Image (tube, rainbow, N blue to C red; front, side, top):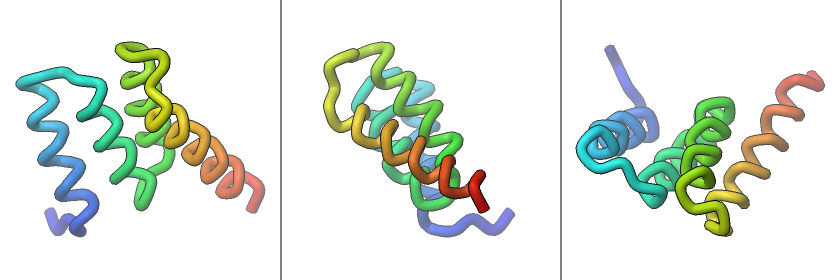
Amino acid sequence: MNLGKNELAAKNFKNALKLHPDFNLYTIIASVELAFDPDLALVHATKALEIEPNWEEARNILNMAKKLIAEKNST
């Protein structure tokens, strides 16, 4: 499997998440995923907000993921 840098970073953060579920890690993963998979970014930003509902960074990533998904679906 030939992963790009963003995909490899997301994979490594997901491995860390298995050891220590944390809203910060979910947010970092979502941020990286915006570059290659906004659908996954949406999932992980949502998980971050389930743990920490007032986390503004995750909310911003969630909104950006929704925007990217809408743009992708409108083409």
